[in-house]
Image (cartoon, rainbow, N blue to C red; front, side, top):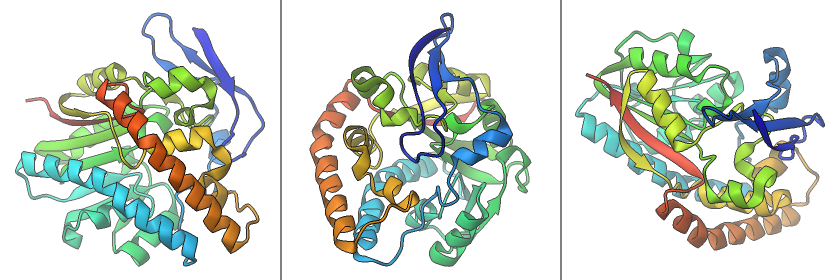
Amino acid sequence: MRTLCHGSDKLYGTTDRTFLVVECRECRLIRLYPRPEPEEIHGYYPANYWYDPTADTADKFAEIWRRFVLGDHVRFVRRAIEDSGLKGPVLDVGCGGGLFLRELNLPQDRVAGLDFSAGAAAVAWSTNGVPVAVGALPRAPFRPGTFSTITMFHVLEHLYDPSAYLEAAHKLLQPGGRLVVQVPNAACWQFLLFGEKWNGLDIPRHLINFKEDDLAKLLDYCGFEVVRRKHFSLRDNPAGLATTLALGLDPMARRIRRLPETPWTKLLKDVAYFGLVLAAIPFTLLEAACRAGATIMLEAKPKP
């Protein structure tokens, strides 16, 4: 291994412990070292990690923006559903409060979520009308061949064994179904420019930092064939750069850490962050056009 950088939890402040980000000299895979033990890593996820907005003005504004930028993901997945030609349900793994599944605008019997958080599952049902199971995908209570499409947005980088999730998804998909996965891209310009300050590392929650080839090889190993690639996410790429540049303005981090703010301070910081996100769009579009965007989204299908 060679050490690329080091850091601690700058986003949520759950620990002062320092971790290394290392690269294997042979396979070039980038990962966190030392890897936290399972009983330890739960402490690095705040109880409200998935984020449930309140009803104040700032949160209403943030929710409108979240729904707008989430349309980028929705369009990508809708095309995957159409290309499969299947009418089975869609499963979103790591669904949080279920907003993405709600935005797909499918009948309730055609969507399902899965998340570790019982609180997130409750909000998904009560707020967005999405049924959610609580647990891990390899032990999820679904029959093989149930789903036409399975999505995993920013899930694989958090796992000790991402291949177990991909193999489970392979079994749960209908023949000809689609898998859509998204992860931060460790080969992006932002990582090259900012190193350990890059928001996509998310130390210590991201155990593996994938490059595009890493993810494609893992999908191939687990029986999938990549059919489409996308290097830009309107939801994630500009916001990720904004958080890298001004961590103290990140709305989700401020809310999760429950920082003391007056309603006006909260709103002004959100507006400043929003302006920074808009200013980041041209750069993030350019890096994505050069196949070096801050995220990678792949559509794959089971091999024949």
